[in-house]
Image (cartoon, rainbow, N blue to C red; front, side, top):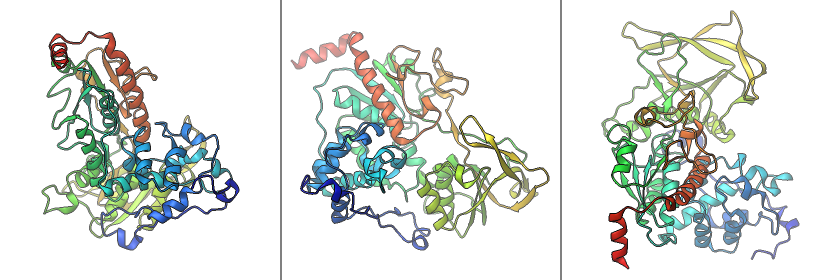
Length: 485
């Protein structure tokens, strides 16, 4: 079918809308909001991808997916082939199709987008991956013969899972060590189920297991084992992919009152421990009638939209800059507003006020105005003297960003980090200051996106693969490999 439509005609095809739950319905459940493309809709959207262009979208993708290649397979009706094409570059396409900011990456540089809406690359990626998953025709990707090399990966978030898939494809024996009781990292504990269903995550993790990747949960590296212990156990390289899950606070009066959560704790209780189902599930989550979310990034939107689904709550997001500077994805803010979340912009809390039982009951705020741009390029907010006011709140969720957990740094002498604890690596290889130790994802950036973490993990996996030949294969492992011949 590709090539029978002129590029001029392709440019006239309107972008295909993805249907989703109505706001008044979805705010009462945790079911995924968008329904995804139907087959005929995906076919029509795929026709918007031009023939013979230079495909800048590929360079815009952190993992280098052959975007025209998989879209043309959809257009030809080869949906399984499209999924296989995606998985040559990314083993987690169903996840990325849902949560990656395509409009800031591949879709941003789409040629079609110069004269109208870009091709809906993310929606088509999701379609192909979902088609394969629902068809049951999921094949283990091609893998190189076993090398006898053993690699340990710390963390099972996007970086850890990607590193594992890349190294397993190359024939290495991979073991993932996960601190929590189930794998998935931030995909499981940080992203709500109405954005990323758990069965999507589990399907993609199950593929890793079929590739021979071992996953050991409840293993806190730095506590239960150290990196030195992993080397003593025979692992020849270690990839650190522990992310950035240490929450930031404002250090203002009353911040330690009951009813004040970090977004990390709140989302973990609901997403991973299903506090929304208490008492059927044993983890509770206290939520009052007036919820304040501080911050306006994607995590803040996740927290606000989750709170809106619990009890009969009023949810308000407080952000110290204007709407133009809001850092979350536009679609996330739009969804939040549709679901009844209110926004108080150019507003910042200055203190929290509690009752006699030390529960938060009020929040003092001050109005802000924008001054000159700061180091990030956004205009710097400054308080307006005398503009203080008090709002009634009985739950506060602090969503101000995250830092890296210091456990591994504290337990690993010689591991070089910056003053914030971010691990310093060679950006081309992911190599750290310790021989045989590599790192990728938020642990080397302090916080980024799922797809960027995956791109870094691919580089680190390549770095590990090139590093391994410089080490002599352990005698016991060599004997086992020789016995196979």
